[in-house]
Length: 168
Image (cartoon, rainbow, N blue to C red):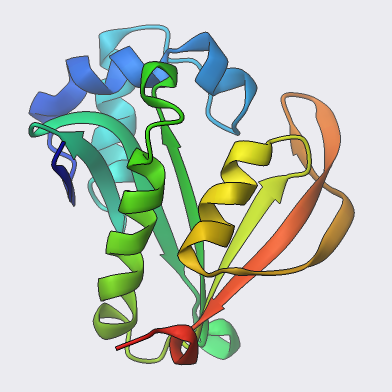
């Protein structure tokens, strides 16, 4: 099972909708439901494609999810934030862990000022916590009532991976 990361293309819209409209994915993430193909195309065109580091997680070159690094700017240029989601039929297969490892292997080279990559995980999503821990992210603590997801304020666990945590 070969996992690759690549930028999204407009031609990926049908594969994108397959995983991005998955009710289980929507319930466990900050993603919203795409009501039409045009709605999804707008998202790809206006958000995913122009983003500095938004990649399709591909299995056999078909997108099954996304992984994104939002680089900091100004006085936060030293850090970035990682986020990801994949279709529920691909959960618990090690795919997301492989994707995060691929990010770690390149993101510090692509963003030379980045020293720290942060991940924020809902305290109730144990599988996502395990993904970051398996890759080497350090748990830093719980941020209580930190973000609103689908109308509910939730607690998140903050994780970090430093450039110096990489093993060569």
